[in-house]
Image (cartoon, rainbow, N blue to C red; front, side, top):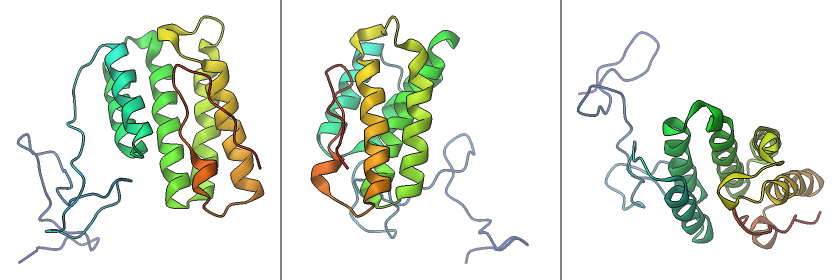
Length: 174
């Protein structure tokens, strides 16, 4: 039986081998928890250290296959292992993926906030973009999608196409 704490939360939580709280529930392709026992999408392993090129390649693959939440996890690992001078860049890229996740989930407010924050976070890297990133294009994409979502918040798959991290993303239209 599940013990309950005074605040109403379960005291019997999923934990990893170091005792940190981890939700072991399966997740769908957008990272939403499913009931225990349901078949979910395999999660990205945490704490994987990749080269910047490997992280961008894996994140792009996940974005292109409709898994922006999982792309965010890859970019978050890169953020955590990046040198201090690049942490804002990787945090901003992770926020782009989370913003798209929220848009696909129908959370317009969360999506627009994260997309704008992401664009601001990566902007300082625009003068000399590292790793072949299209900082200017990604910023345009993020601001364009945020504006399009505010103008017409209904879910429209065509409008919610993922960006190309290293290519020239197309800004969504309202």
